Length: 96
Image (cartoon, rainbow, N blue to C red; front, top):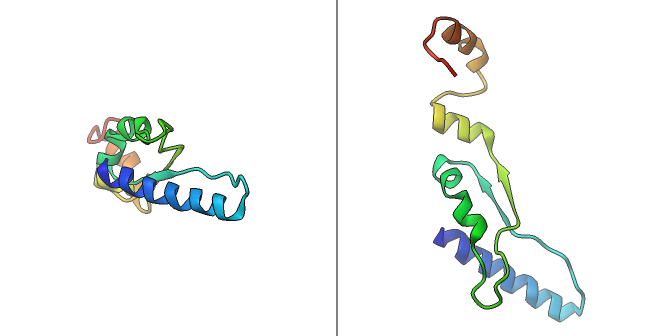
C-alpha cells in the first residue's frame, strides 16, 4: 500500500511538472498491475488512496495479470493446466 502510494505521488509530481512546463492540460491516469494474491486482497485499499494534498484519487485503474494470479493462487500454470484440470474435475480432485 505504501509502495503504491509513494510511487503514485512521484508520477503525479512529474506529470504536474510537465503540465506546468508545457502549459498544456495533458491528461494522464495512474494505475497498477495486480499480479499477486496480496495485491488482489488489498485492491480496495489501493483504490481508496487519495493524495492528502488535494484529495484526488491516486489510483484510476487496475490491470490484472491473470497468468501470475492463477499460478500463485492455484499453484498451477495456465499454459499446461488444460491437460489435467478436466481430469481432476471429473475425478473430484478439483471441484471449482
